[in-house]
Image 1 (cartoon, rainbow, N blue to C red):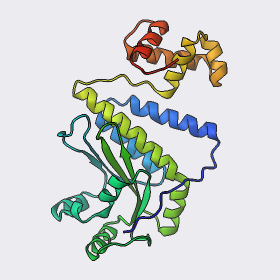
Image 2: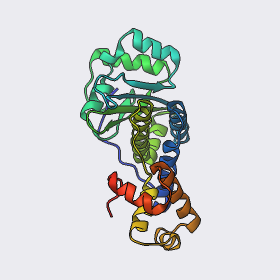
Image 3: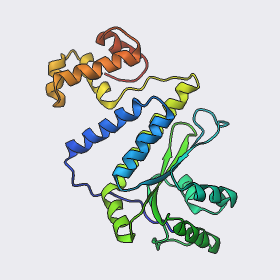
Image 4: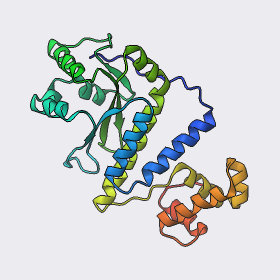
Amino acid sequence: MMYDKPIKGDYTDDLRVTMRRSESLCEAFSGAESTTDLCELLERELSDSGFPLYAYRGMNFGDLRSAPFFSSNYPSDWLHHYQDRQYILVDPVPSACSNERLPFRWGADETVGAITQAQREFFEEATSAGIRSGIAIPVHGAGAEFSMLSVTSTGDAKEFRSLCTEYGDWLHMVALYFHDALSRRLAREAGKEQVHLTPRERECLLWTAKGKTAWEIAVILSISDGTVVFHLKNAIKKLGVNNKQHAVVAAIMRNLIQP
């Protein structure tokens, strides 16, 4: 394994399409009913991007003493082998993630950086298990929160590099949204629920605070007035109030919007 400079994606999608896709993903994560649903959404999104295998590890969600959260669809034989051999002490990816803020590549096909003989043998074993190359995405959250998402493709080196170029930035966004949604879900399950508004819900509330009608907001945001009403109703429900004016006040008091 070797890791090199951070990945920078080169998107060809129209910016508006990308924004809608990210908004849709954010809302899907926010609407998940359980951590299991969240992980299933994550797995599906990663697979659609060409990375069918993943491993996620998150720590310090609200409490430095809290147990780490782990989810993965790697082959069970490899996961057991990794644990039995205590490869967490050999694998250079976790320690690299703790010192990095941007995604980086790792794997048998990478040639940048120096690794020990033990690490080289570790990656030879991983390759034999079908885990040859991947992208590691560190996420440093609020307070001491920290997580890493490692995703793996099953193609050859050329295909892997192509996927990195096309989806590198998108995977970074996916990891950030997932970490945020998971943190809030775990807080709710621990009885520390916090209200989370999607970017579009905040926008609609902000324009409402400025006295704009649903129709005027729709024109400003280039969406339908029905969509505006949909987002406002969601915000009203999340904030536990009766109308959009009360929602604006509640959002300001919670520091969720700043008119």
